[in-house]
Length: 343
Image 1 (tube, one colour):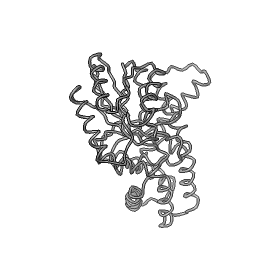
Image 2 (cartoon, rainbow, N blue to C red):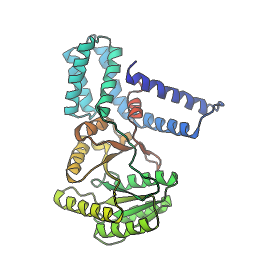
Image 3 (cartoon, rainbow, N blue to C red):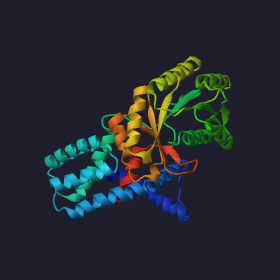
Image 4 (cartoon, helix red, strand yellow):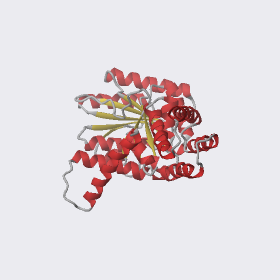
């Protein structure tokens, strides 16, 4: 049994339990199991556009070709590229697939489907031990810095992640470090008020000065989580690099060994442009993870694989809807299941 079959079995059972719950059958399910089912459902529903576009095309290949040929590989390559998996990633994948087909003498398309999904899974996992979990320490103040260009949903992502921490019982503060964009500080404050979490920000133009005072307050009042917004400029890399270096110095001076995470927010609907942004920001500062917004709004969900393969930065959160609880931790197995459920 391939990896995908095992993944499918696990989540198919979750869907059976979900149906039993919806039919109000008496079934014992823990709160943790309910949460797992909710998250799996979000992946299934949120990836429907990508699944309809991607999987349908892959399924047609099995009907169109009676044997695995160069034409088959060419069409598979085109499907993967149009799904935003990325050209280099696809070329490597096709090479690996060809070797495996030859070495295992694969002729059955049903088995080949398993192999395709397994190999795509391995693009993300590889030899690394990847975790979507944030590097959060208990009983300490943890600072998370958010970066990304304007328009990707950075402020909204910060709010949604703050909402998650708040519901988990953490003491949360938002700091408005985007002093460049008009209205950014007020927008973040509105979110803080709406979520009933603390906010620090003012009308000063020096973001490091604002962050400094906010962190002093967070440290002295023993906040668990501090989420810091930053300006979304990428036009002048040198200036942005200096600005981020200054912010990092300020943060580490006040609260040593922080920020614990620097998260780059990318809009999934921008496709390969998002990968370009990841490369650019990686050159500027130490990015520890990706927040991928609007994954539910694109038919090109393969961008997750492209980001990992081309910049080797793990996806930490994905946005799978507009609601406050629709920003969820990334899970490669749930992602693979949501993308290939009907394959």
